[in-house]
Length: 494
Ligand SMILES: Cc1cc2nc3c(=O)[nH]c(=O)nc-3n(C[C@H](O)[C@H](O)[C@H](O)COP(=O)(O)OP(=O)(O)OC[C@H]3O[C@@H](n4cnc5c(N)ncnc54)[C@H](O)[C@@H]3O)c2cc1C
Ligand code: FES
Ligand code: FES
Image 1: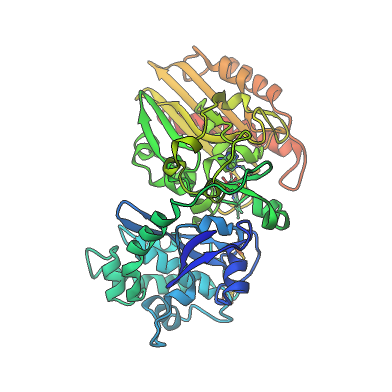
Image 2: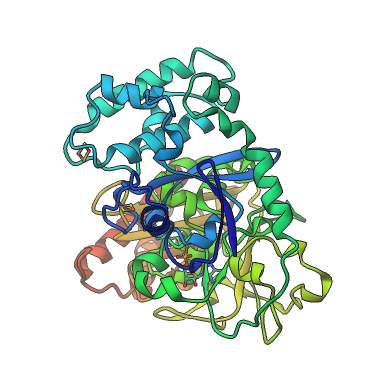
């Protein structure tokens, strides 16, 4: 049984954990304010807010309900437009701003925009027009045009800037951005999460699909997923940590791209983190997309995969299930840490270097029932330089035609460590072993002969094919140009 709060109602349901939250709210709860557009995470018509109780507050993030398994709602506060509408029948400040700036015509997209902007009001720590607009980067409007919606968001910024503490829930309630019952949600979630920890084992699981954010699975196999037995990973908060331990950076497999973006540890190491990660899809998808999902999906152009390959990262996998009887709540999510000792995983973990993780197209060096638990890499020191490049048909909200990352450790202009990755130029995400080795112990800037040698080796390691994203020749040329772009970025003064 799944338990969560939907708007102001506590829900206990036995509906299939694999069905989408969108179908649950529209067809089972008849909350038809949430719209169905693309069902592929692209349009934002189905945007809802997901509130997670942590650090003594509820953090709200926007997500696309069309790709979200119902099981990911377990223990959370789910907010649809019906949960935002004031009972008085008046408009919230977000809705009012949209009306006054003519931000809506047919209205099909409007709910998504209102929900995303409401989430922004609840979360913003630094209200700026740029951040408000970024919060609606996953919402598409086909008829109004964006200028009026941008003006509506500027009105909100004016409102938020009236108070230093505008990110607080109290401010949102006082200004009727959300209803007053939001104040009780924290305690209600705590109660739900405490009571479900007592649920006991009921059935062994033999065959299951591991699901995290669902942003790949629900695009690739939407029908299958509804009735699949799923091993839900997304709600395991203990696998979301991003920490520094003994000179290395460990990232829990269930950390999302947004978790990385907001991580102080990552921001300290990667000064261009925001610039790079904002190239990955939209805010709602980044709020759902996990590192494990990106790695295991094994797309040759997975952005996080290319990123971590150049950090020469190691993946930790574990076969936690074997034939053991597992409690239902493992199947539906939440942390294993609350289980009794007898049902704790046996700890058969092993480590695989990410560069050895891909054995062929979508073929991994792990078995289907091994979960990815975390990924780690050596903490870069002040001699290290890292760059990520991605070229897509559109700069934002698009998957890569070619992407690549480069990590260098440079001492007195001598390259003492080098790792280069390349996506979209082979059947798997590539670690360019020979090009990386060839860079070792070279002095930068290179002479012409060295550069020719490097390009020659690079070309021998890639094998792009022509497809909808570009011809093989174009991708080959692109990869060479991006290789050069790395040096321009990493050695700006040269
Ligand atoms: C609109 C849209 C835009 C996108 N844009 C980009 C983009 O710009 N760049 C990009 O790289 N990707 C993009 N993606 C793809 C996707 O968002 C990412 O690959 C994401 O990281 C997948 O993570 P997830 O948690 O949603 O994976 P899921 O869909 O939950 O799972 C993906 C695969 O990983 C497996 N899996 C998940 N968790 C684990 C685990 N812990 N252990 C073992 N196996 C596991 C699942 O079984 C499945 O095979 C986009 C997707 C959408 C819908
Ligand atoms: S319906 Fe388009 S993003 Fe969900
Ligand atoms: S108002 Fe019609 S799609 Fe936006």
